[in-house]
Length: 391
Ligand code: NAP
Image (cartoon, rainbow, N blue to C red; front, side, top):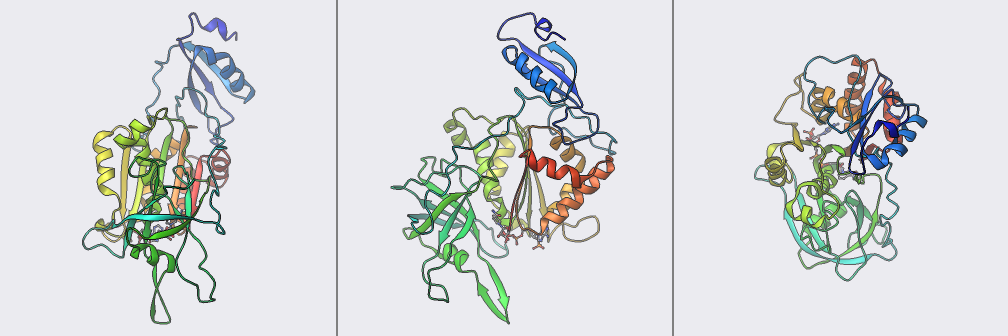
């Protein structure tokens, strides 16, 4: 097919290429995809698709061939084949993230920030202690992006007489910080408490942070991590699975996507995809950043979806505690439809214990479609679309 002959006009024309059996897809079932590209990119996109082994079905003028809206529900019974339709301006390239800062401050030479605020995130009746702590980074070079972590070195000495080791915490703020000035970083910290030999033990660093007063100096290292970075694609779909304080990076993503101040600051990034948050907490008063999420739901109902698993108030279908993997199982059709699109990324953060449950839910959903999750998951990972940070 002569690609250029399929078009009849100049540079602002949008073109649609419809392909089947795109080999870049992790889904072996027959897949039809549409790529809507500006006319100028038609030749290169066509060539790339051909080289990838895709079967070109059609090249047509315009972009009105009716893509399935991302995140639309398939509702009822599971189909035997996945037949998603993808619309992306250009086929997604794996982001290099080469310019993302790492290890600006190393443990031997930490930056000393100053606590600005330290506030509880919990409501009356919640279990435990979870605080939002904001620190001033003024005077240093610590820059970070959403999805990274920083290290904290607690004051004092460990039992062996040496300084405490660093503990890593996922950053809960965007690169602009909560004040949008770009000189702060925020964390979401739960005080770790456990019993040992009948004695209540408080986690060293989490207690240090939950107790720290505004004005106090705090030793900070990093930033570190590139596993949980958001794609640059403004039309990406982002599925987020968080338990407890694992919400930290997701809170940053969602602010970047939907906070009015962030959207003004973010020249060149105006999120237009689907964001779907699954949040697991023990009780309703333990929900974190609930007001922020509710405001995004009101302002962007077409772009933000929020599904809660409140383990000690809701029951799963076996009558046990409702965990996010049970919600994932309930929504498996829609999740599968989304992740079969190349523009979809999934992020998981929080308790490591949720991973087997999520795998189990995805295994069952894949099996319903005659697919093998054990094969699919590594492919999604390799494609840079399956992001996991669990402790
Ligand atoms: P939490 O409040 O204790 O628990 C959150 C929810 O997860 C609760 O509803 C809990 O249910 C549920 N849960 C327990 N076991 C589960 C399982 N096997 N599968 C799915 N859900 C399960 O959470 P948290 O204390 O904030 O802890 C979050 C964890 O994430 C910590 O281990 C923390 O270190 C880690 N974390 C990791 C990162 C990271 O990797 N970057 C960042 C932040 C936090 P029940 O208690 O009712 O059973």
